[in-house]
Image (cartoon, rainbow, N blue to C red):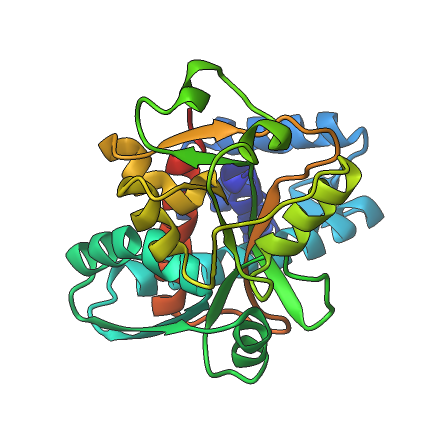
Length: 300
């Protein structure tokens, strides 16, 4: 972020004098000299030996020059990539995610992305978590979005967020009378639970065991959309994280009551890509939008 002093320093080295560098930079020599003096003061060492009208780099100056040139090259690459993204009118981007997220979160992302980038074709894959990771690893998807992704050298994490688990109930339900609840209060109501194959179920089962609670759900399903719909219809209550029901919560058709049971961790959501490379510009735009949408939802 020291763009001016880096450019001034490199130009002085190239021109061989402060006066000639100032001419090339279209500034007064005193401005260039001040930047060089400030840099020398910050580093605590001279960058040039001033011999008559000639400037010769000191050993410290040689080190700074190598760093400055590398910095400018890197910055040029960043600027070029930004221009590619800004000017992108067409292309393809793909994201693999889990069923619950596909139904609850991706519609908003898709709508906003299409409005901003109508020429880019999206591929959105609804897969089990193992297949989400495989599709990213094998290059079938640019990005993966899933809960509780294990740490792996094969993936680069672009964003991590945590989503608390709670009781999902209709407006006016007795559990809405308090700010939080516990599992023991939830089991007194008809309970709709995620099936064992969903990532949330082992978390809930562990919490039930720690609290020595025996649970007998009236319905188990792999569909979080069905869970939400059944709660809206008054069939029972369910246990999900806050992101799972964000649309209904904002619309007022469902209420989220956080669970406060000790040891009940939130679900960790990760946006990942394959390690060892940079995403294509279209995938970069999609990743940035996913992150912005999650940030918006994390806000109170």
